[in-house]
Length: 315
Image (cartoon, rainbow, N blue to C red):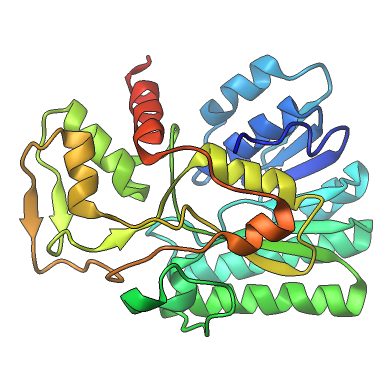
């Protein structure tokens, strides 16, 4: 299935975290669809370099960048003055460093966004969360995971993710603010930092002729989804899927060893059997997203890895 065109035509969208990996790709898509986009990012983890293509391609007045922290009072004033149709919050709890204080800040960010949306009468909030922290270890027979599966939050991130979902439900129930939560599988693609994803780390190792470290026995599986597919789901969620948590994944499992074989062309790797490997297996069912968003991933793992590798070789 090819991506939809113009899902957010002529809308005004604010992307919180729009200078990050996923957020910057979302910005590119919204601009291509003809939307007006406001980016809010304090650049603590994002970079303006991720927005270079957006800044080049945007028509005059279509892109505005606000380098502020979305948890401070100034953010609510920016939302009030721009009055976006949709507030898109990118990559809450994303990255391995999002523990403890960082996880708590993600909750504060979600609360700040909802409070600003209420004051400015924004109609909808779309939030992305990592699905892996919601379910914990799942038996192979229960994969791919569907949304009705009982949640077993993993660590602080999992607890905060559930709290964010409950906060969204409360604002919808009490204040009429619509939401869609996109629970993401392992997203990869251009602009991703090597420390934040095994795909970009393996590509960097292969380009540098280094041996990557594989945690555990390498048999643990992940559901890898190319960033363009995730962005298509994000675009569709701006006008569909109200009040729902939807899984965004390929539904396929790939082991870490097999991933390195694809990227490293069967070159050797260093195995660290004692290292924490996380959950043993993970894949997400996209049937609910297909029903409510009309979304299906279209990029094969091979094509996505090729595109990511090619982007990494560009100056």
